[in-house]
Amino acid sequence: MEGKWVQLTTLGFGVFALLCWIVMFLAGTDIWHDTGRPDLWTLQGPTHHDVRAFACAFYLLFVVLSVQLIASGLGVWAARSRRDG
Image: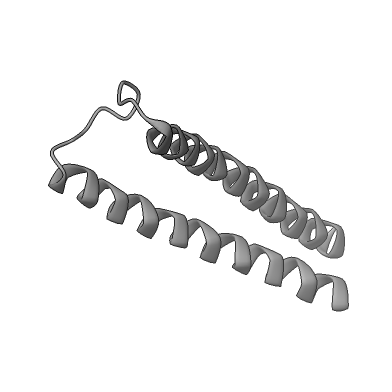
């Protein structure tokens, strides 16, 4: 029973984290449009290197959260199929 609780909690936190990422994406998109759609890859200066690093990490985070969510879902599904079958 404890393993099932841990798996469902992990899946729930994964869904919550992905929803938070979506909110951050939508807020960032609004800011990007309001600032005149700057091209982050061609801007010069030390702070723009930080912004580019943030953008790369932000989009990589989506991949990591997606893989974590898929793995959690597969774990719950495998546990349920073992229990039922």
